[in-house]
Length: 614
Ligand SMILES: Nc1nc2c(ncn2[C@@H]2O[C@H](COP(=O)(O)OP(=O)(O)OP(=O)(O)O)[C@@H](O)[C@H]2O)c(=O)[nH]1
Ligand SMILES: [Mg+2]
Image 1: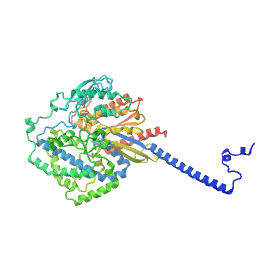
Image 2 (image 1 turned 30 degrees about the horizontal axis):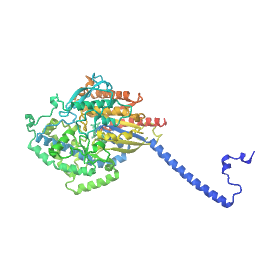
Image 3 (image 1 turned 135 degrees about the vertical axis):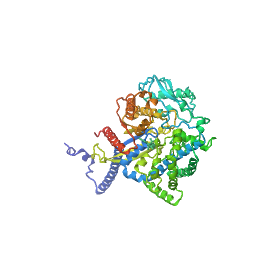
């Protein structure tokens, strides 16, 4: 047995030489110390990287999806209000400009309607909630089967009258061929199929085929005569439309409220140079295109002055869209607490020093705005033109006294109701304390969890930006506004809004990238659905397969839930996938809080399961 046999092999190999001189020993020890230092540094870096990776993995990532005006940002606001309270409260003041803009938008919509009435311009068929605008059929037999692909009935709009006509579409199993006649619509406008195709995963050709087929039919049917006389716009020569409804009092009001248009410009400037309008075809006026918007980044034709003159142009835009939207490119720039403080100081200073500050002008116009809004004749004009301001986003006319006050600070409720269109993708980081109210799951055991919430723009031209976020996302909260069964998309009046939601949901369910993602569906705007049904709008008119079921909100929501559930069943790649369904009105912050608590726990549980924690 050699002496080395008694030694630990590692010690044997690293043992200093037996006849080492003091100098050699010093040099060796220096070398060893250096090596240890480097090794420690590497260990430290690895530790940091591991921690960062764990943190990233531990963060719960949630993507909010749905068409424009479905309530994504409003849901996010609810989340932030509850779980990022401090930041939320700091930001409240900075929403004043948005609320003021929303208020002025309602007033200018009325002023435009007055002008249209004075000019005897026929009321266009706007995409208002009261417009009978779409018939949605699941199949020819009306037996609720969205997946019967042999032959289906879809709504088709006559481009002139905007009246839907039902056409039978034989669907072939091949996608649109290059021989399909080119669209008679603007070439800038994305095709119906293109919008969903962009989000489609490999395995789901169903909606592609349907959309391709529908495109064919739309091409064929454009220009078809309308059979629905009620929907045809009144001719300017019709004697009844000539009877003047308005008096000199209304003319005077219109003149006195004209300064609000200048205030509108000033407020938009305050929101930032990026405050923009979106036009019906999805283009952003004033945007030269920076790659963020893709198709929509083309300067809009309707944004320029045409031969009709600016008044008619702007009027047409407003009556068609029934809204004038504001967008900021980076919401955080507007709402960042530090910048907010500066902005507030600056705005206050401006407001105090300028006699014609926006707040002053709004305050001075208060009485005129009120008399305009309560005027019976104006109400008749709005009704005639199918403008329902009360049901539109960012309606604040009933809060005039509060908002017109110079000391006005928006309440949480105001901010939740304020409308500011999202452009691009906005990321929010929120640290949710598991001990925060309503946290049931593993309360206290986890300390706090970081949540990354992504809010996206829902317009068709902005949907291409969604796809990169499908990877590594823990949950999708999909918002489908169920009150919109009788409305069309703002950016494409050929498409029924409910149908658009079904198609998007189908695309999400069939995406292979999302097989491990929790799917949560908010059937939103139930409050508006209730109001609409109470006003006598019948679901069956737009959704024949609804049949003779009771026309109440409970039955409608239950029926639609089954539709969404069927889509999950038939389209999930692996089959048997679970989705969670909630009937919501996300402007109601109290009930939404209860829903969010449940949703938060569901997401967290699934997240922990996937990370093998439970
Ligand atoms: N009455 C009612 N209004 C709602 C509801 N949900 C959202 N809204 C309002 O609808 C408007 C649009 O909501 P947003 O959350 O901005 O819509 P979005 O989905 O973010 O829209 P984009 O940013 O354009 O994609 C806002 O003024 C909301 O206050 C609801 O359940 N009921
Ligand atoms: Mg939004």
